Amino acid sequence: MAILTNARMPVETVNFHLWQPCNMKCRFCFATFRDVRGTVLPEGHLPRRDAERVVTLLADAGFTKITFAGGEPLLCPWIIDLIRLAKGLGLTTALVTNGSLIDSGTIRDLRGILDWVTVSVDSVRSGTLALIGRMTAARAADERHYLDLCDRLKDAGLRLKINTVVTAANHLEDLTGFIVAARPERWKIFEVLPVQGQNSGKVEPLLVTPGQFARFVARSRSVEAYGIRVVPEDNDAMIGSYAMVDPAGRFFDAIGNGYTYSEPILRVGVRQAVSQVTVSRRKFLARGGLY
Image (tube, rainbow, N blue to C red; front, side):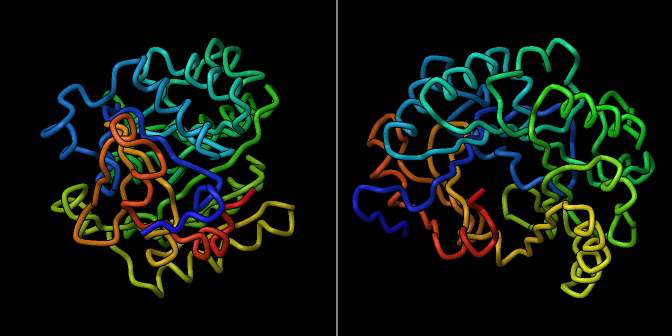
């Protein structure tokens, strides 16, 4: 369970998966929240005012950074206002997106209120992206699309991070040339994580061995010569090291068989809710979560 000392949250950063719907169907996704939508939240997201209350309570409780995730958070029609609210509350703001919905208008709206943008890039090969389900309307992106997107985000003054999930489909791929060209400040490399009830039944053919993951990471470290920080996270590093809030406004963890959810923040408050899940500050710091 999370240990709170001196009225502090166990970690500084909270990930708010505010939006269950997504416009992609990645086979490895461990944040599908089909269970949430099928039981407690039929629409897959809180009403706008409730989401705003959750963000306000998280800030009041002592979190200093909030990452908006999904699903795909840019499907939320009021995501810009929610980010603006978080920024006004003094939080460092971040967004994790598949990048498919970012246009010039979105970038203009994010300028000045969003500190970090994380783009999920698992491959720059359209065939591989199609194989894992990272595509929209039967179309997958390519290297040119991702490089152009990264350039436009950085030109707008946003700090760039790239997330890559290593699976059986891409573990032999060398992304270092793309990463050097994209020049993110951080490159987070995840080992594909199986979670019962989230990606079970789809993820199994995509699982990798510890050796395959380690070799992908070792091959990728060459980008550090260009000032890009490589942050690898195997399954053990991921589990229990994040403060995460689901689309229904509950903290959750993946310590057991599938996700375990707290009582809703709007019912019991942040301190009681976060105490009902496991968040290890030691593991959070060990994986470089403080930045």
